[in-house]
Image: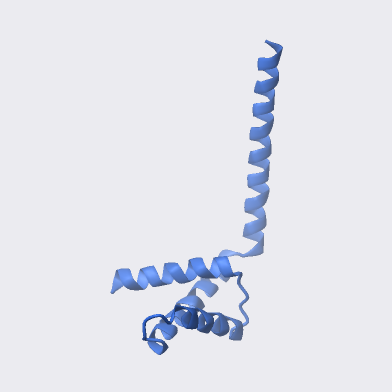
Length: 100
């Protein structure tokens, strides 16, 4: 009986820790990059991806396109980590293909 009570208390404690950590993590991310900044970055990623698609038309030029996008964003003073950039590029390319 005592063991079951301890396990139940441990389970509740873990749930509280997860909720607190999730709340703090979400607040940190929102503080780090606000919606306006994300919209601005997304706009410039779309411009850069469309430009890269026009410049590098041959197949197998994915790395050249990506480097072009990175350089373009840096020229605009936008620094974004590689994982976030990959996600934004994929979203823009998906949307371009979907609309076409």
